[in-house]
Image 1 (cartoon, rainbow, N blue to C red):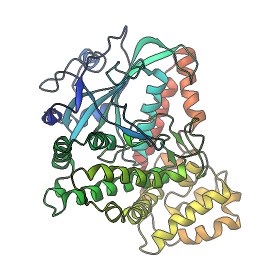
Image 2 (image 1 turned 90 degrees about the vertical axis):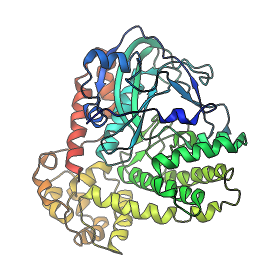
Image 3 (image 1 turned 120 degrees about the vertical axis):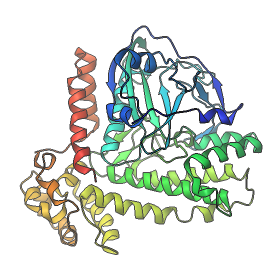
Image 4 (image 1 turned 30 degrees about the vertical axis):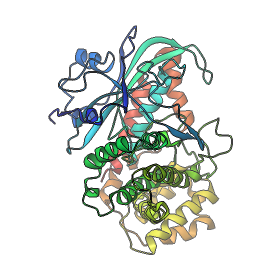
Length: 465
């Protein structure tokens, strides 16, 4: 892939960002370099020294942004509007095309203070960096639209946090995402009544990410529908992956539909619609089962902001298809995770209900079920030879077992490949993340981290279409 730099964000002009400087770190120890992501944007040829200069000291990339930009935005946080937001420990560092010609942003996390730090230190704990690398790698393997963790450096500072043992080690992360424009970016301009900049932002996003909207007779309505479609796909993918984002504020949802900004995320050990990822989410507002509804609520807030451009925008009508889209994408995600071909309606739709009903009633391990029954009926012998045989012989499974017989595997040969001949599936539950971190924290042993990434990549290869 050829490196193709972009500086499109500069066309937005004044009022969207603040020029900032990166922190100076006492050390730079490379802990993760995502070669696949680097290759997709033409950065794979960077030698170790240049990689460090670029992603630990943030020397500008050639023909790219010459100064980091902290982006401005607002957002609803746990349902309460907050106008005092913005990039507080990160910035936009560069832009480039990926191997499909799509615009990507290079964004940071833990790169120092900005005008929006609100008294924070602008840093990222090493544990937080490790967790984000693991989360994005696992989500990508599970075919969930997500940002990618490109680079992680340990930076040699001691940080103090209220929610983990301190002092703790520090890091700086660089991630790739198709856009760092958030719902809250539009909300800020709406609150300020800035229709001129709102139009400029709208045109920027549409021309780069939603070109089909440009020819629409009602572009604002069409845009909201298109954004909703992408987020319906992401929400469906979360549910089938058993993923709980944890903090689905409007400033944590970007306009292009990838999940990003990972904090207290978790993967379900077992099906539980009330499972929450954040210890501070006492009401369960962002629980696993509430994620689709939360996404729709956030889309409604985006629609309200877009009324700055189109006062008569019928938000309810524009978002009326969200639920239908969500169900359609859930069908697709379920079939892909189970390695099955579509059997048509109503069989595909019924499969969703029967799988989740069994997972709920049986409380079998979430990842184990999808591992055992990948390929459907073709995996029956393998599933029955595993540790959950008694669950699969129970009356609770009978209806789902009959239903699986309606489907054929999408790629039968994969059942004979390495991943599905293993004894255990790859997973990323809390205890596994803590095991990886404990080795790093206690003895600076990075082997479990590398082994876990290799384990996840094996899952990704098995599920890849």
